[in-house]
Amino acid sequence: MVHVYSSQRPEFVRRVGKYILEAQEEALKDDPKAHFIVGISGGSLVKTLYEALIQDQEFAPKVRWSQWQLYFVDERIVPLDDPDSNYGAFKNGVLNPLAHSGGHLNLGPTVFAINESLVNGGPAEKDQLAKEYADELPSSPFDLLLLGCGPDGHTCSLFPGEKHRYLLDLKEPVAHVSESPKPPSDRITFTLPIIEQSNRVAFVAEGESKKQIMHEIFDKHDTSLPTAKINSLIPTKVSWFVDPGAWQLVQTVKPE
Ligand SMILES: O=C(O)[C@H](O)[C@@H](O)[C@H](O)[C@H](O)COP(=O)(O)O
Image 1 (cartoon, rainbow, N blue to C red):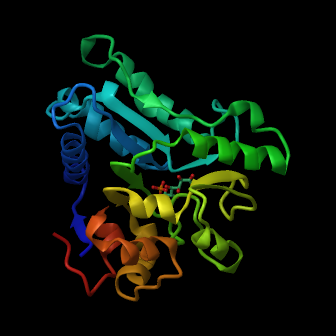
Image 2: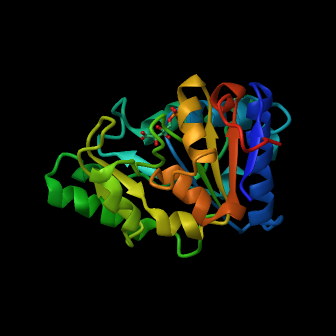
């Protein structure tokens, strides 16, 4: 069964933080040499991560950042300092504040970014960029994926609709997506096989703009939506963190 947790900020942020720390402990088991392998999306998640893992005085000291290996579940094919870069947003929103938080210099996670030298190339270079990112992936499954959910039901850069349906059938773990309905048009994205193999998958989705799509996902089980498809494929591994604004139209599922 998919777990759903609904609360307003700041409780929402605390729940996400607690869940991430549980996943971290499960992966590291107090072994200083172990790695916690995590995939993150862009969008509003970055601010939630900052508040839950850096600003929160109880949680911040418990995050063993230097043992984290961090990947992007999707990335826009732009330079890393471009305002559209998910890496850039994470650097500004989490890595930079982390470096000097708590009054001392902190070791951060190992972060895997795209090969920036290929971003201005043609389709062949962009395909190559996706392939190179796939080659960087760990040999073991991800411990945790932290995903967003767009108002159209997309997650990672797996978009709904006829034109992008092929993405849900891909076998390679990372794909180049062109003509994304949400700009910028060229991206890379994790695909379903890598998501299915992950130990835990959490969706973090807030706001009224998501209320209609939550109804489609949870009441209508519309598995043409990538988010609903993931729920149906690996229900026992999936958790949703939502707020009452996003959840207001859902009738058939009671959040915890
Ligand atoms: O590159 C992207 O477009 C994002 O990674 C995307 O997949 C995001 O996670 C969702 O659109 C939800 O974004 P919000 O949480 O900001 O609504």
